[in-house]
Length: 153
Length: 153
DNA sequence: CCTTGACCTTCCAGTCACTGGAAGCTCTAT
DNA sequence: ATAGAGCTTCCAGTGACTGGAAGGTCAAGG
Image (cartoon, rainbow over all chains, first blue to last red; front, side, top):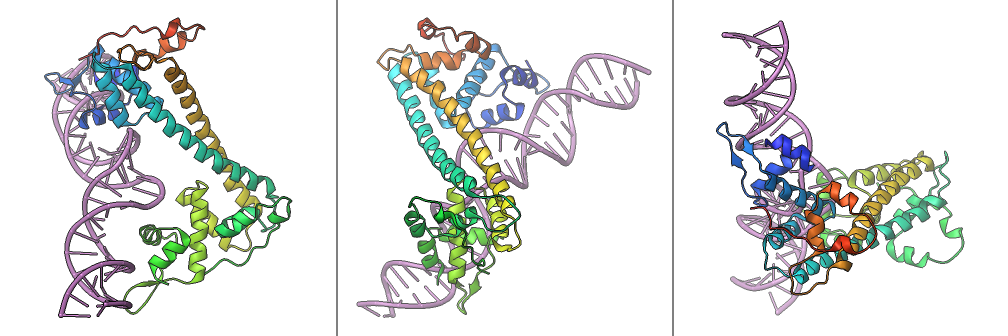
């Protein structure tokens, strides 16, 4: 199988496949007399495995470990679970971070009139220094009243 | 103010400040006779603004636009809101993507015994090709029964 | 037989937002 | 005088590729 064929079937681009080979994630492909890479069904399975792992957000280094475990018949499921749990926890941290950003932004967007006037609570928030932002957590809408000053030059 | 001082006060590292200058995000700092950069309070306010915008997940290019809007007294709050809404939507997409990964992983982790045996539903999932994975969505636990085969060599 | 176009090859550059480190100059305190 | 901290510039590296250039190969059609 040529690289284009295996790429299409596995959903991994030819560029990515060559890249994986160059970093030693997959073993170097066999070559035909004309120099073209030649892939077997087993190679395609490996690429599918990688594709799926990547789509679950595992890093290349994680995938390297997962491939090792997959290949190793004397692995323990505990090792696989530990690796996966670690990744899951990292995902949770990332989701929490983004969700916190999302919340702050939604809050800001909600209070911006979005009209032709320049007053904007979003810019007010960005401009405000951190200590003030913490104190500004009191209830009521007055904290969104615009009090822009000229930007520093 | 030296770069180290303004870095500490703004929470932006000296490296990052120099980087921002090099890409034209902030105007070149004044220099003292000895060649050291010299920062004003206004410069620090700009750095604070950038710091806060970055912490809300805005890209550098977004921050560039936000700074322009901030500096522009004839801006409209509609423009600021549009930019922010665009970013908010991107965040939502990212969160949805990560949450979907998280769900799949949590499902997998839950069904992995995590003991000394090699059977592992996580590896089974990674190994399974996509068409099969879709079909395997039937209820019941049998779909997690391990049926590892030797890894391709 | 020749051409066209789709493949394939390698290698280099660029992405994003910095950080690390080297080599060298300046300042402050002892 | 010297030590150590802080400043300068510049180059390289990060992650996981993608884009593109320059050139070889293959299959089909005229």
